[in-house]
Picture 1 (cartoon, rainbow, N blue to C red):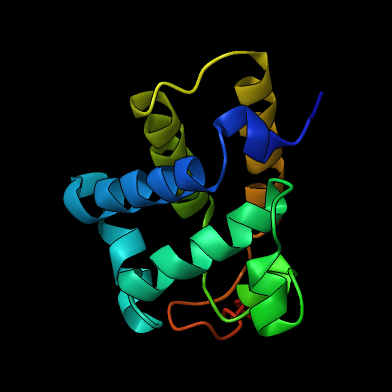
Picture 2: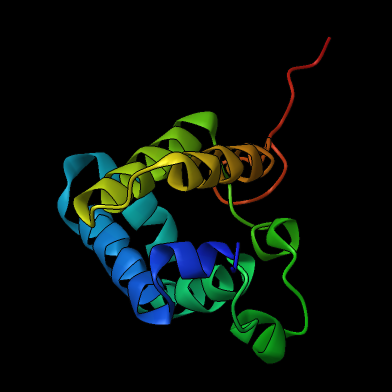
Length: 140
């Protein structure tokens, strides 16, 4: 019996559906506005859909498409230039939770996935300023 999360979700097609639903939510809900803005500064949401699928497939125990393409799976490196606030992280997590629920993913393994995503996402919160440069600190 496999314990890979990709198998719990029911394979690559399910991961693709999850990514599509997640980005549909980002693109349509008011709470996704700042995430949309951040993606517009980068390569856009269409590219993010592809790269999120590539990353999540490997992250969940499937083929490591992202690593094959980019040579690593280092989330901090991928997001080093992106100003990620705690609010943005909580929005990302809430929309991913909703996408999982919308697709009927429930149960203890999905709860474990949610906890894992939360732990990883919170590690990406940084102190970059508005345009991805270190925030200026007030003088003492």
